Each structure stands twice: as C-alpha cells, then as structure tokens.
Amino acid sequence: MSEGAPKTAAGGAREVSLRPATPADRDLLFRVYASTREEELAPVPWPAEAKEAFLRQQFDAQDAWWRTHYVGATFEVAVVDGRDAGRLYLWEGPSEIRIVDVALLPEARGGGAGRRLIRDVQRRAMAAGKSVTIHVERMNPALALYERLGFRLVEDKGVYLFLSWSGDAVS
Image (cartoon, rainbow, N blue to C red; front, side):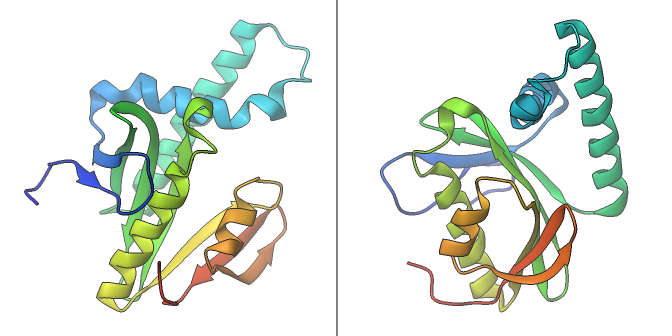
C-alpha cells in the first residue's frame, strides 16, 4: 500500500479504513473527542457555549500533550462505510505499538468498527513481534471489548488502567 493511501481493516461486515489526519480534519477530530465526553458533561449546569469552550481547550491540550510525548506517532482518521467516523492514534516503540487513542462518533459505535480497528493493530503487532498497549479509563464501555480481545491488566493507575496484549492469535 502506498504511503498516505487508505488502509482497510480486515474482517467483519463493515468497511473500515484509515487515512492520515490532516489539518482540515481538526473539526472532525474535535467532534470525535467531544462525543467521548458528552455523558460526563451532561449533568454539568453550564450553557452549551461554555461546554464547547471547555471541550475545545481540553482537546487542544490533549493534542499538544500527545504530539509532545509521542513523537513519531501516527494520527489517522477512521473511515467507516465511506464516512469519516473516528480517530486512531498509534505510537510504535521498539517492543510495543501503543494505542494512544481510539474513538468513534456515536453513530459508528456498536457495529464492530472499533473491534476491527483494534484487531488490525493486533495483527500488525503480531507480524512485528510486538505487544499492543493502551491506557483506558476504568469506566470506559470499551474496556469489556479490550478484555474480550485478549488485553490484560498491567497496572491500575487510578482513573486509568494500563492494558497490554502480547500476541495471542488474532481471528
């Protein structure tokens, strides 16, 4: 596959591919981020404008931190059934592929797209002889998916759990 060409995740009925994120994707990536915080912010009695300003500040800070601490990471847009629907950020080290972030818009969740993205990362790691690691909030509904896909707890960091997958067969 040529550099910059969409990559398609294997398996499942939905068409899932990745393409490099560009500056033109900033609003999409913000919407993906904001959608992951909706439930958390729902009870906060702020006007919509204040919530959006807060989320934009948090999004910008998160993006800056990741780009500083995961130099060389890939920042990709997940395309599900032909529509931009999420993000997959990966950093590759000598012995691991770190899932820095994976998130889908609500309309793309629950249909197997996330599973396909993670399985594809696992296949790539297996081919390279590497583990896959991820930090996940303990209340994240995707935690059950990671456990089903063979991720195991490495460290409880309070709000976050550090999980690792080390090369079990991927179907």
